[in-house]
Length: 329
Figure 1 (cartoon, rainbow, N blue to C red):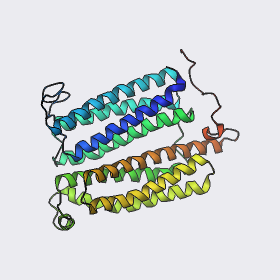
Figure 2: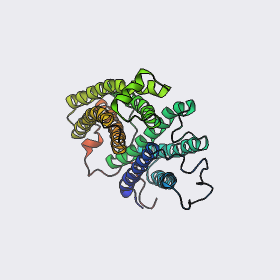
Figure 3: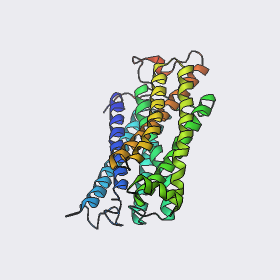
Figure 4: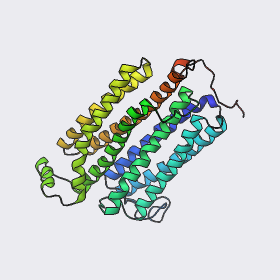
């Protein structure tokens, strides 16, 4: 394997990991998290369940596919450490992806062993949700940055300071907080389903669980976050001429607007599984778009601050891969 082929492999690992994450969403929405009981890593005491029901197969497929993610990310990290010099941005991102993949697996094990799955609405599960979501989002960020920086030939991780960080930081924090409330909202929707819109609205009049209260915060927070993201997108589009930054800013702005609409539409349709999955997928795209926009903004700002230093976008595709160990090394 050569370093020149690394970006393609990294994008493949990222794409497959996203499919597994989406299957994890389906696992939760379909209340199949207890499909293998409280056994881990075995499923009902077996490596491969026999004559299993639907929830068991959903859970088993998720575990098996997640195990493959761990192996792929491990291979990617080894390749990055062998193919790129010490301190390289790709090395750091791949290393972070491996660490976060391990912690993601541990979160899954903890949820299963303690029974914080399916329709469980214990206080412990409510409290652990933001930590699990944060790990998942950081994992997605590490995976996409590994592929992005390898493709863009970025040598150093951008410094987390300056005007750009003050612009990007609140938007990233807002989307992450929105993911927390979204996780609580999804759990409430699954645990306390409503047959009609009137019944769903009635739950707010006499909330039977803290999740109903937490669900109220999601749409309110969404409006504020969309304003933050919109401000970031407009400011980026106004200040920079770089085509990549402009494309990312437009994409992020559009995704934020679509999300603001897709949430209420999903509720009006009484939360069908496909609509909930689409809403979650769009949330992931928004997060990753913001991560790439933020990383690109910070890299561009660093290049502007150092006269004579060109950004990866300005260098073009003909520049040799900097910091890459020669083939066979």
